[in-house]
Image 1: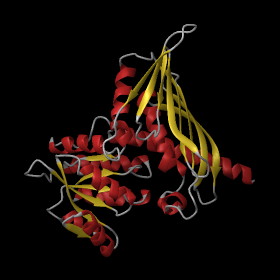
Image 2: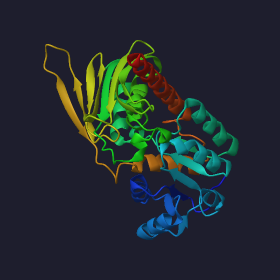
Image 3: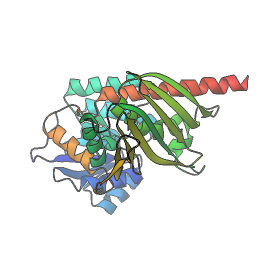
Length: 337
């Protein structure tokens, strides 16, 4: 396993877009992390990024990055459809991998990466920063302590009109385009966190002939009878919010859902007026810092996964995304007949 003798994880960011810029800034807020390199498909772009951010190393070849002894871990921030191939190569080279969501395009690919990480003794995780935010950690703590009783219902949404000239990852089917994999992945993960395994799925929405889903509404039926409703779109505005309802109360998450600034805890029994408690949490950097700290600690401890977001959880959500895509495609094809 590739480890750092200085008890710091030496990171490289893969990709030179907006995600990479936020990544560099937040990694630098972690005392146990050092950002040393960037990799882009074009060396000139990598060099410009390295100069802008003061990084000593720039790579235009991913294989060369994986072969470098100066790098311990990679943050992969490239389009969805590239994740599996890049992560596979990095894990085989002994590099730790933290990969933008979705980790892969299929559940089987995610599980295959998990096996590779274990075989090579390196860390792997999908960058589901929502799970590590202070607000979400506190919400989980309160739910587990029984603050709202048994969780039964959840609603969550995330969407906005993406212009045709916007990022290709939304519009290009070959890159995994659509709203489900880019946005619904958060809402589905939220439902999984609080309501457990998803047993049955209903889906309706709009999908183009090329497979790019434009908007959808999903109803999730969880083990034990709990339910969730999830809406997502790249053509309409859906506020990035959500709420969780229990037998004795509810949690109303503040925006944005993927990195909430806090939530309202509402408890009480009608006809008495409810008790409303506002909990707010300051955001560090762009919001990735708590996740990066947790990942750095896991890497330095020799772990190959993190218990808050294991590959098995990622694979379950991916299975649901695949099923939702299939249902939308069947609905589209039926309407076309």
